[in-house]
Length: 301
Image (cartoon, rainbow, N blue to C red; front, side):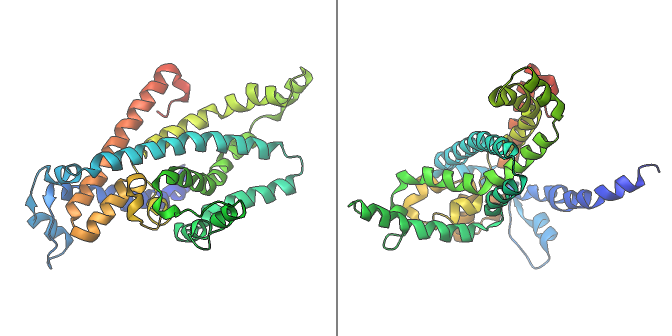
């Protein structure tokens, strides 16, 4: 076997997908059953549970919160995808233009660090800024003679807070991918452009961005596939599960979690996961079809 070494290299990743992505697919049957755990084990519980058809889906979307959680999930992710793409590419270009590479690595490390912080820690960071009595933001308002704000009771500010925190945590990590792609661009293209009199902006517009276009398209398509998935830690830990903020912080993932805490409906949570997966798959297929129709080379498949 000529590619034995290569096959062994991909074996860990293949096993990971089999165990954590493909094998759990058999559990989607719970979405159509009234799952009740018994002492006979997990699989016996699935077999013995009563079929309820689409009742779990009906339960999920029969409440007044169905529109709110779907709206919040989609709109937040849409904003994260657009702003994340623009800022990540811009940051990667800026880092690639820094002449002092040691200084560039320091900047890159500093912007990469937030990605490794857990949402629990980020939530406490946010609380140190937004706390009513000792928060830094209210202290700054006090310096200007303004009244302190109860940030964890004012829903209108949180779309901005959540967007800024999400971008702060993810942009540095995402920019590394684009920075690696920029480093792989043939430098002779830039040298030829300089000889022709092109300035930095013209080089970026004519060389860097077109070279990054395939990667930008693929990563955007993959992100669209997860547009119905929300970052649980961002929407649960950072707002500190404040009930007055549910109108702008409650998403599908947090709604299912709170439902499990109060009712223990495993079937409903499985239905929500299946709903997210099916819609995400459809969005990827449709988006890829649109991209393929206008630019076949940049399509995902």
